[in-house]
Length: 287
Image (cartoon, rainbow, N blue to C red; front, top):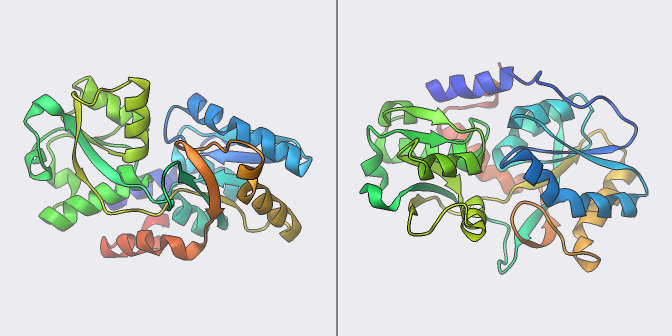
């Protein structure tokens, strides 16, 4: 299936530029949105960690999701923020261990949803209306903008996105996918409710122009992880600092957060199950 090829191609590109080895702690961020904005969002947490750990902390993001996985695999990233799927891949490739996940303000769990968005005036009201249409996803390694919308289409129609849609493309980031809909470059896009809400609030998209036509079930939140081969005392210090950050600062991250709570590998079994249902075993993705 072409999805396998896309994931394989993404993972074959793991040798993209990674930061040079440094003595200080490096935090990697997948480029879910504009890289500069991602780094700004995490800046308060970077400064807080630097103070709590009494070590220099720098932030790094790559041109795509797999670049951060590769940086961790090479030992050039110590802590990384991944999406659920990219974490599962990083666990296999780089020994990533999840330790914390953000909870959005007003929520009591770290879950979020994948959504399909179309222009409100397009006449597209459901997934069925997308047959033969031009649609953009985010990245093969994205959960809400890759794996989950693919799963939704296959489960509902028995066809892959390439078979069901007309022109099928990847926008590279969630905000780029939203803007592709707004600007008429595609008929619809897969995104998540976090970026959608942020862009509405910023006025980058409008509620009467961009409409959600379908959404997934609740998904496990995007975890903060560290390399499995970090010293145990270093892991403990990092984890303790993050889980208690809300007692000292207004925590920041992907979306408006109230605090971080503990994350475990088992929290992401739902993602592993989707991969298996689609026939995308770890061997399929990594060979």
